[in-house]
Structure formats: C-alpha cells, structure tokens
Length: 375
Image (cartoon, rainbow, N blue to C red; front, side, top):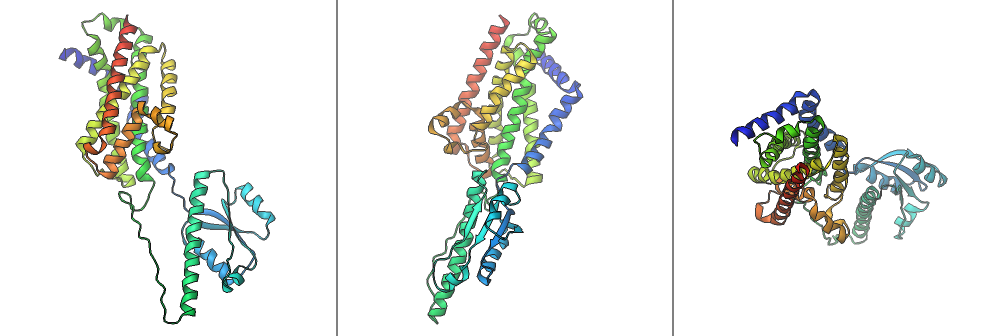
C-alpha cells in the first residue's frame, strides 16, 4: 500500500508542477492576492472628501471647520457658496460630505442658544455614511463640550466644573485597524479557492483523458486512490497557508498570538472538509468546465455566509443557522480567535466541533459519490 500511495503522490505532484501556469498559480497567485486584497479590503474611513458651505463666515465657524480637518477623518476639497450647489456636489461625486454652517452660528453660541450644523452625506454606501456620521457627531460633541466648559469657567471665576471622561480600550486590536479583521479572513478565503477548485478538477481530468479506467484496473484500492488525490493538494494547501501567514506578518504586521500547533492542526480539518467537497464535485461532474462552474456555485454563498464581510451575528437568525453547514464560517472564527486573540482549543470548541462534523460528512459524501461514479 505504501508503495502504491507513493507512486500516486509522485504522479499528482508531477501533474501539478509540470504545467508552468500551475506553478505560477500555486506559488505566485496567493502572494499577489494577499497583497492586493490586504491593501484594498478595508473599512477604515479616513480623508473623507468634504465640501464646506460656510454661510456664517465667522471665527466660530472657522474654528469648527478646523476641528473637522484636523481630526484626520475629513479632508476639505471644495468650498461652495450656496445651498443650490450642495446636491450637485454630491451627485458629481466631488465630495462625500457637505458641512453647512448656517447664518447666525457664532451669534447663537455667544448668546448661549443652540446652534445648528448641517452634515449632509452621500448615503449610497450606508456603512461608510454611518461611520462618517459617527465621526461628525463625536467632533461636534467635543466642540460643544469645550465651549460649555469655557463659558462656565468665565462665568464662575475660580470654579472648575466636574466632568466625566470615558476611557475606552479595544483589546486585541488597540488601534482599531480593519486589517486585523480581514487578513485572517483572506487566508481562509484564498485557501478554499485553491484547495476546492484544484480538487474539483482532479478526478474529472482523469475521466477526460481516459486514464481513470487504467488506474482502476491496477491493484490500487478506492481508498488509496482518494488519498492519492487529496494528500498532495493538502500539502499544497499547507504551503499556501504558510506563505500567506508570512506575507501577513511581514507586510501587514499580523502576529499569531495563539498556538501554531493548534492553528495548523485545525487547518488540517478545514482542508479535509474542502477537499471532500471538491472531490464530491469532481466525481459528479463530466467535464472540467462543469466542475469549475459547480465549485464556484458553492463558493459564492460560502464566502458571503462565512462572516468575511458581514459578521454572522448581524445576519437574520434563519441565515445564521444556514452558516452552520459552511466550513469557512467555522474556520474564519478559528483563525481570528487563534491569530488575533490567542485563545486555546477550549475557547473555540464549538467551532472545532462544527468544522470536524463537516469534514467527516463531506469525506463520507465524497467516498459514496466516488463509489457510485466508479460503478
């Protein structure tokens, strides 16, 4: 058995690395995707293009506008002169936000009245708009607090008003950088793209070139055949994952806070589930094109329901239950917990159990489907 498996492994590796395009796909594509997606995929909102309509043109209005520009979140790119230009500015996309300081802004502040500031944002991207509105609310709140404390101090000489300062602390990601959320997710995403897609064409390729019948008349068993088809791809999967972790550490400053042994062990379970599903697709398809289309049919909902872009707990409850049959959902939790939080196995036992059940289920499904195909 050992010799037969060894020859199967050699055959698969030769097939993979004989094609120069496959070598580029295995060694170059993960690094390129990690770099491009790691830089492009972010929810950090900075330097928001801002237009200003300062109808008051006072010291107070300029002071407030300076608060916005010095925050690092807003970047003034245009000054407009009338209300009629607001809509046109947003429609043309020259600015994402318009700050409108109305007439009488400074007068109301000096009189102790409530002054108005209008913040008009392009609501096309609702998530970004919500973040922008939160930034604006925080800046205006700090500005109002400063004015209030200044007025109290001037009215009550020698009196210092009591205040409450909120001390906030974000554990595991002190600077609240979105890359710490997305980089582990990218590893899970790219890993499933390579392992499932490559495996999905493994058996069907043998069908197309007519070698599967030759293999089946040899002494090799079905179990040995499946192992011979999956183990080389699992090794490539481990190599791809290691490569992406190195890129994440060197380029994006990500550090594995937890156990490397735990991370690689659970990655093996994830690879088994992906390889099992890929083999099921390959055994069911008649052509490589059909296998690839079927694989991408599964990949799209798997990515959307994995928690990569939208946290699972934000999804409707019925959809949350649907994510339980998605291996990427569990592995995404495992990666973020081990890499960013540094947790142990006991802290993620639900994800480990869920991923293990899926790995066993997909392996059995692949074996049954392969047996029917051979029959």
